[in-house]
Length: 302
Image (cartoon, rainbow, N blue to C red; front, side):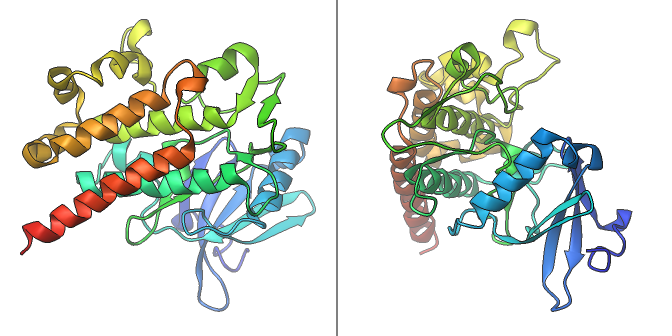
């Protein structure tokens, strides 16, 4: 890994967070990779070691076009590293909320949501692991983008396998990221597949509005994105007001698609998790939206 990353040169640094740092690397065969180096203080701790082993265990068993691929790992003398396929366009959070925002049209945003939905659907159905997998930390920074802006879900350190038929895990410690927490999970410690659905709904709101999930510049009651926009999603006049300004030019011909997208997001962030859709239902609706946008794009060029 030292050779691949030029001794973890700052020139190859892609990003950093509470877990450690991610570097761009080049393997001996010329393949470009992303190397996730865990902070030594975390790798020596019980929780850090658990997250590392869970990620290796789960990702080594998964195979889906919208999940980031684990190429290898290193666990030697206190060092913990994960090697992934390289995603040239970084993560969704950077494009929506970064200092230099990259403009994404409506079709691209629906495509990203569709890809992420199919990844979560795959996890929840559990075909590779034998049990459903709850991601537990689904958010825009964990949606990576390849050279064609196709979404790939990453970061499985907090993921939880749950038994078929039960599909509920009770935790004494709430883990995840503020702004994406299922309110039922934070209130009761009860983690379910629908907890991922809630977080997915928050990401849909980010794609729709261009706003952050938590914004400290707002008054306390309005800092949470769900609180800001929930009551506006079903009214045409109000929905147009909360729409990302970059999308307003597309309104005349994309309004029906935007309205359906907003309606699905509204259902995902319902407080009552029994009224939220499954990820299979989300994936199906977004597939239909994506197909209609693709057909519209083709017809407009002829």
